[in-house]
Amino acid sequence: MEKIIKGKAFVLGNNIDTDQIIPAEHLVYSLTDREESKKYGHFALSGVPIFQAGLPEGGKHFIEGENFLSDYNIIIGGSNFGCGSSREHAPFALQVAGVKAVIAESYARIFYRNCVDGGFLLPYESTTKLNDQIRTGDELELDVQANTIKNLSTGKTYSLRSLGDILPIIEAGDIFKYARQAGMIA
Amino acid sequence: MAMTITEKILSKSSGRKRVEPGENIWLNVDVLMTHDVCGPPTIGIWKREFGSDAKIWDKDKLVIFPDHYIFTKNPQANRNVEILRQFASEYKVDNYYDVGTERYKGVCHIALAEEGYNIPGTVLFGTDSHTCTSGAFGMFSTGVGNTDAAFILGTGKIWEKVPESLKFTFEGELPPYITAKDLILQVLGDITTDGGTYGALEFDGEGVFSLPVDERMTLTNMAIEAGAMNGIIAADSVIEAYVKERADKSFEIFKSDPDAQYKAKYRYDVSKMEPHLAKPHSPDNLDLVRNVHGTNLTKCYIGSCTGGKLSDFRSAAKIIFGSKVKVPTFIVPASTSVARQLEEETISGVSLKQIFEDAGCEVAKSSCAACLGGPSDTVGRAKDGEVVISTTNRNFPGRMGSKKSSVYLASPLTVAASALTGVITDPRDFM
Ligand code: SF4
Picture 1 (cartoon, chains in turn brown, green):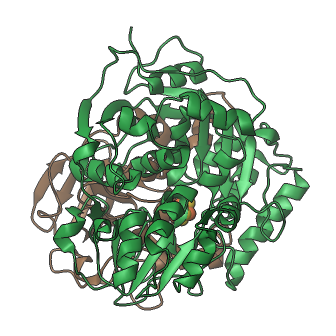
Picture 2 (cartoon, chains in turn yellow, cyan):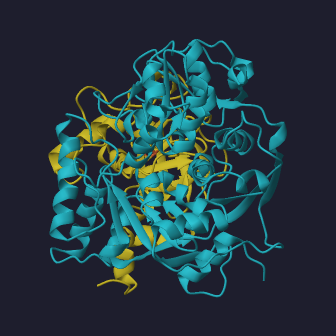
């Protein structure tokens, strides 16, 4: 696991549901075929109404043109991030687009589990509301050991909740690696 | 120490005497359900992790229903169904209900009930967030992603955090213009879309136990819209009879202890309730139907695991009988068995299906259809600028198709009344 994650922020509002993260019509592509699975990156966050995409101004495209990688790799969300369907395609799509971590006030259970058990990205909970403190495009530095996020564009540092009892799974990589290390599966 | 029904079932499944909310425990899974959207990636992960000689932990406990994207020309969607078909034949999965055959069932959560997989006291996981629907049978059921499902497929086990329970007691007698959908929309309005996160929503009271089985499933179905892990209703004689007709299994019935601990308790007098709806773009955006009366609509939709069951169509048919709809109206039975009952059940000698067709509705084949938008050729899909009223469960931007559409969620009575006028209408106007 990387100890320091640096990247540009993409800021979103509350209740970003999985249809906004990856609209249902795109769930048909293969997740294992490397080329085809890039489409998930290309369509990541394409369901967010444009005026709410890339706050505070909005109107920002998470993915430009024909790309599948985003310029932004840390998502700052509000409350109840990832609500809606159980689709694991959602954290997968963000991962394909290059997202390393999401920092939100709270998460929907299935999305949170999927991030952790599938080893797609880090789902951090913030201790205060951050989506009105950080602007899309701000340069961030996430310290995974100190559980802090520093906004290099403003110099401010915010503390995050520790990943708690799911940390062993995150450190192992995913639930299978964790279970192997624990001797649960061969 | 006193326990809730959810805690009792999880204790049993984890082989413990008792469990406490917040604890992470390992559960033994009784049934794993998957479908065409999440089944293929689940199988892919399972093969990747367990190798070419991967074994299903117990193939009789695996159930697969193609139901989401099945009546489409989309090649990738059809490829997904083909992956399921080959998997089922290679691994001899008997509980595979292939589309295009007599065995085809329709929407998974309803088919699970109809085919006798919902058994009180058991633990069911599914690769679909509305797996919580099965909780209407006094069992623990919840949705997981593909990785967790692949883990279950290989081991029969999964970790889960024991949820805190919230209790919702519905007292009084339901007026004829109120359905389970109105009750659950009221709950969502009160606790919001994250009010149940990592929690168990437990429903009881006379207003719940007077409901038929499929209406109870509407309550547990939308527990996920509050972010809950599961929704649950203790099994009673109605559930016992339903299960015994469909499953040849003995089962244990659990009930919450009277002094069990709850995070919160809510009480409602259903006799005083009025028809509700959720306005765009969130299921907790509650209002009374009469407050938005007259809003112009472009489409009405009655279907899905939430609002496409026999009781839903009975309610709608009573209102629509003998009239014509003013806007395109889609009738999508959740399962093939519901579709059959629409042909068999009659009002004054006319089948429910005929009532809808005579009124000018489009009666579609059983599947998830436009509940989740789907490929561009999906029946009933919302287009740019549309204003839809629907019996489905989610109205986040783009859920039913275009993100430039607006969706109101309401009871089958309210949707039927609105279909007759073309504007949002209180069903009491037609009762
Ligand atoms: S009907 Fe809708 S909510 Fe139910 S399983 Fe299908 S897509 Fe999901």
